[in-house]
Length: 408
Image (cartoon, rainbow, N blue to C red; front, side, top):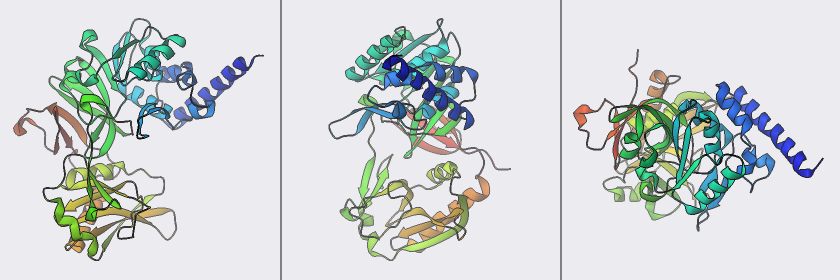
């Protein structure tokens, strides 16, 4: 038996084990996605990785970095690929556009659409498209159409599409994506809203899109015309504490200059969650109710101790005039759960801490365990009176609205 044969058999075992894991955890729910995931030789699209790395169910394989070492292209984790394919609901004979090429996901889509369907995959990077073309041909998926272009304009030559899958992080939804979607089509996109990214499945209704599901995810950000950088507010002018804003800085960020010189206020909420219990709806709740919502990151090498978040790289935060607050946790006495609390700095720290803590308690009473907000995307020119009620997030090409279902 040759070494190649041994590696191929080992890869098949690892691939089947990954699929078994994803079926067991509920990510894969359809027989067709399961069959596609068992068929496509993922490791051949990630030759830089070992078989174990290629077939880790929850880890991506990074395939290209920029001059600063930031990842600009990757093969998404099997769990993310399966999750988005399930959201998309791809059927035989469909015409599908993938935005963001790597090859592997396009091969999975090709399995789902079958010989009567069409798959177009587009990327702005010529190295990425050349790699995808080479790997797709080598693995028997040469029928996938690979296009090099800025996906801000979609790929009109082969529209309309029954499904559009975006496999890079997007801050906005360009009008071309909606226009090139069939009237009963579906768009699945990792959309960043107020600093939080969700894989949102949208269905088209005329000129706007309405979500059918929204799931937590993370993706390499989009390049080209659709690129959007978060803005950093460095508290007290140092890199130790950075507040990241997705939709513009506060009107007068200089008001925070002395916030860290005030005593830190604390407010504990009495709201607890199990150590492995998801609380993504708390994130979206705070993003919709706190006008100054942002994300705080602390550089551990420069930190002098004015803030003590549970997660130094990602803490839910808000700015209110000359103060800021962030959500943290502490272990419960039995060590089985953590309790949410709020720390606040600035002259009005105690009141701000209590206000944010009150919103954590409101989430616990009203939204915990329920569905997240419905997300709708409307053209940028849509007037307020034609939008549904909710938190409106204005972007370049669209107005995104997060609407919570009414409480019983």
